[in-house]
Length: 209
Ligand code: DC
Image 1: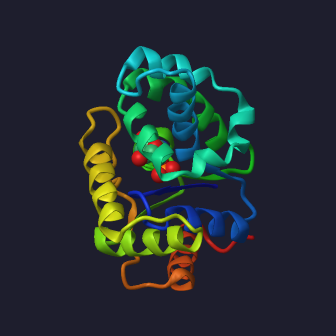
Image 2 (image 1 turned 90 degrees about the horizontal axis):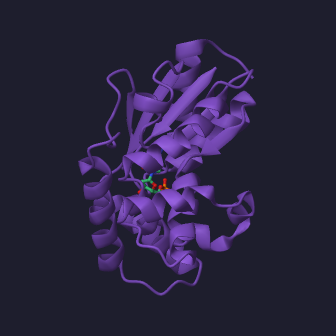
């Protein structure tokens, strides 16, 4: 079984993808990490994330980069969003994601274009979202909890910028697949969002795991 979980930044899609993986006993790929690795490697190489050649060269990043805590930084998320615009970068990361999706037994993948491009044949697709203000509120609280000094307004501005770039790009923009469940978790807490996602997938594929 393949489960596709897409949505904008800070929507809670990663939490839902991990919970689905645990519930159904499936491996999970956070595809944003691939773009984050490319963005961060571009910076390490002193390249320009807006330059397609520099970003493509960074697609050769070593797997050890996945262990670098800097991949989780907000600034790396912005770099990822910038390099992800380049079609050559998307092509370079394509097969790795497709192979993960098609592994025996199936998988859960979360990202922006899983249900539309990487696994259009997925058994269940979710598009997880929440209002920009609620996403900013949650992201801000989480960052303060980690000791990162940032204002709510700065977080909200970053979310608007990321949304505009991720939905506005020409190649594989962020959008809901026609057959994806729209899961708006603005008013749902973590457990309610997870329960709704599990119920949807079970309804699609029957009870497993
Ligand atoms: O999910 P995330 O915030 O870690 O993703 C970081 C950026 O990577 C996101 O702003 C756009 C890009 N991305 C993408 O273009 N396609 C994906 N499948 C996943 C992420």
